[in-house]
Length: 284
Ligand code: ADP
Ligand code: MG
Image (cartoon, rainbow, N blue to C red; front, side):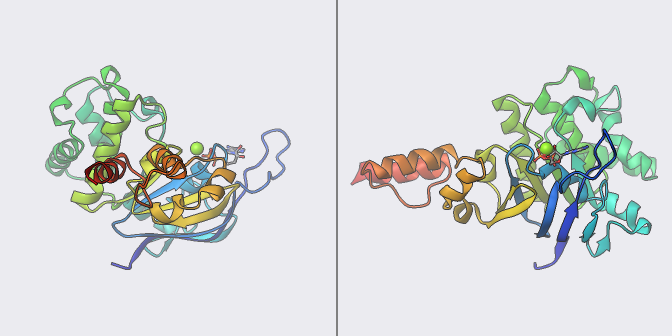
């Protein structure tokens, strides 16, 4: 599957200063990046590196000053594609409370497809399917504001997939959640990617979440610093640290132990890989 669902070509974006209307330095500064259909791409970068700007450029919320962004070949700066682009790429943001629009979970999830003019019986089915897909079906009659942060984010995700978007861009969806909420959201998103084939762009500053991705893109000062598999990217420990980031905890611990003479395997990133390698040592 070589088809790209998203293509960023030399994208530059600058905000205007609120004070005097002058243009600020580029928030995104010449990024070229493809997102392949069906993949799980993690986007990493420190605070202010340009991740949210890149996310908003992906479905035309923002349009580039120069360069281009296309969604399945549709240029986001071309107004005639606006509707099709929004239907193809959905967004989930950081704050779960800002994304809830209704007072009952299932009404909230129905909001998107209603706006698309989907017939009522079809909406019913899509809402149920979407809520099942994120494990929130039994909460369909609940009041969203009484849910936990992780549950609210899963409802927001259901709202996006009820529009049958092929790609979902999540901008730090776990940043405001506790560890169990983070895990719930991460599990739901991984499932959507694996079982439903939905393309995922997952913006995060948690290294441990990037370990699950097919590919990682590291953004620094509005530029693409590194791109590759999690193993390729996190092997560049020095560059990662220069970008103000850390390597995943399991990787950091493994490399400390290796420096201390413990014969662990190369390229350990996840806790699972750490445990497997450690068990092998104990057996010898
Ligand atoms: P990240 O999501 O990685 O924290 P952002 O894309 O939000 O980064 O921000 C990139 C740069 O653009 C930062 O320097 C930030 O201060 C600036 N910026 C973001 N939003 C605005 C805005 N609405 N107006 C002016 N500057 C902004
Ligand atoms: Mg951001």
